[in-house]
Length: 261
Ligand code: FES
Image: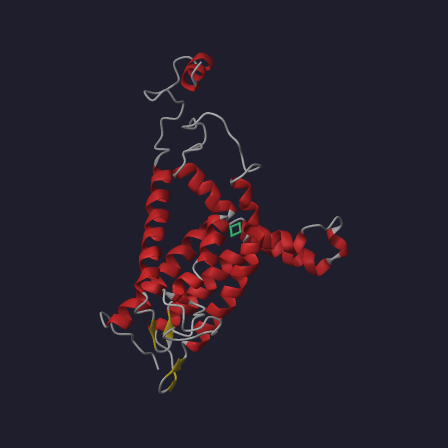
């Protein structure tokens, strides 16, 4: 018996024209997710391939930070020699990319919206059978905690870039770009700190939380932030894309950075 048939059998006369019980616009959320995530992936890939207009003193695009190649326009850490001829973005983008790809929230989002497994509550899967994340390849999603550690390292550099954005060629100052990079670092920090792996790091493996008051406090705070992890995931995604667009447009001379002082 098909899933739709079973619904009709169990709740006669309640299924809509699609054979489902849901008659609301359940498809809006998956559609927006496809547009948002898909658009970001396309833009980030394009920006990573550009290998240009990612630095305009004192602003470095977060897509290229930390800049690890000696060929970078603004070297953060010269770990890779001049032999690296590709875009320096590729040396680092895999870290935040892997962090988001394995994120508990994004997993739910793209399983639902891209794979339709299932696309929404009470809407049947497009495929029959569910193998879950206990077998290859999805078992690799467990690598998330290690991406969390790596992404924390990248975040340190992004904060450093935000501070460096106060150091103009003619001395200390602040422009719109400084603000953009600062806000980007704050949003990415909220996303990272509200991560489930971060929460586990603070409060996991503790049988009696009261015996570790500091960890309990940190865990309680992170648990509160964790409730809004989806919001931080989206807002930080737009924030980091906006920061790259801003630096790019200033570097290209399309817009002028306004200097506050
Ligand atoms: S769960 Fe989303 S970043 Fe860790």
